[in-house]
Image (tube, rainbow, N blue to C red; front, side, top):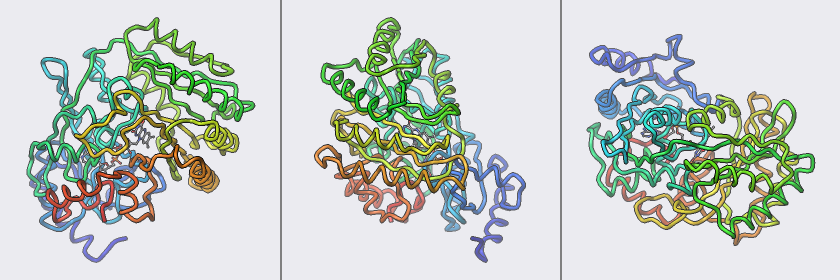
Length: 463
Ligand SMILES: Cc1cc2nc3c(=O)[nH]c(=O)nc-3n(C[C@H](O)[C@H](O)[C@H](O)COP(=O)(O)OP(=O)(O)OC[C@H]3O[C@@H](n4cnc5c(N)ncnc54)[C@H](O)[C@@H]3O)c2cc1C
């Protein structure tokens, strides 16, 4: 909603930026504005005050100083993939980081410094050219820093850890607009609290040598999806008990294709020992009535591109989520029933991420709360058209309720902030759910670093 001050603020900002030509400016009156305000969640209709895109780290500092001095609230956007579209807020200045995409690999090839606006695929491509890899999620257009700093689940977590576990150091624009190197206390907050304390200009992260990746979809016959899902999970739980290698990751997924709903496992093997990986793909395929197994050698950039083809670049709707310890027969039954009645829109999906191995071990250097082996139920009640979303949203809500009614001893008290529904929920409840015992520490750090709440619109909202 436009207030009386809006045109004046926009005009003053435009005049200021004439002396700062490296900061690209898009006014609400510009024909470029509709595209410049886009985020992945198409239902987020908020109109930012204007959009600025600094081309340099100094430009970010300049614009934060200006916004603070003029009491202009602002948001930060990199990949625009916050599920609720929180990187745009009505009347707030949008600072777009997409010009900051440099990657510098260290001379010992054990770390890389990556700028705050880079997308996962851009980073993967630059590292792969060097024979290197680092954990990331499955979708190419997600912002790497937004993924890594709020947790960072993905297929490399059992092998190398979560996104937060890769962060060695960070350069940040402070609430005063100064460019600073994060100390250990601030780093701990960034590892889980993301952009709560400042704009992250760059992260230095761990990287690992990798020449070959084995990936693909193992698709199961889903005529009788309840039986397939129940049988698969009973067998997979047994396999987990006997032990599976850290290089192996499977993500159960159900989605709609023009030929109908599919229940599949996305297989990832992050090791150069391809033969061993192929043996594991056969073992996973043997856990259900397989109808297709296209696991084959590829690279991380190619794998991301293939995944991206499944997820529309703009969606409408809501997500629901829950963390559970195991897929017990009771959970598997609810899962099967949920998939059985999943609406047929190409945007509606269900996916299960898993935390195990090194990523599930206790650590004291982050505020990421959920450090024990678990599975993340991602109930994605989205659609490709706004008008169709009601049915998928209802489906997601019902599924969440049914999972909540399963054995409470199997349900974790905390959930992943990046999947959590925060709309209309008290921020104290959101924080408790996402950060558990770390809430007091997180709030104390915010008070110390950003007492005036300059970064008031960062994810998650604290008040
Ligand atoms: C299709 C899809 C797939 C996903 N897959 C996964 C997955 O596999 N694993 C997983 O863990 N998560 C996944 N997510 C969640 C995703 O990791 C988070 O929503 C993440 O925060 C998105 O980052 P972004 O830069 O794209 O988002 P944006 O909407 O651009 O940013 C969201 C917020 O993050 C903060 N932020 C981002 N970058 C910076 C920065 N450089 N400095 C300061 N603050 C910053 C800001 O508060 C910003 O408003 C997925 C989301 C979607 C929509």
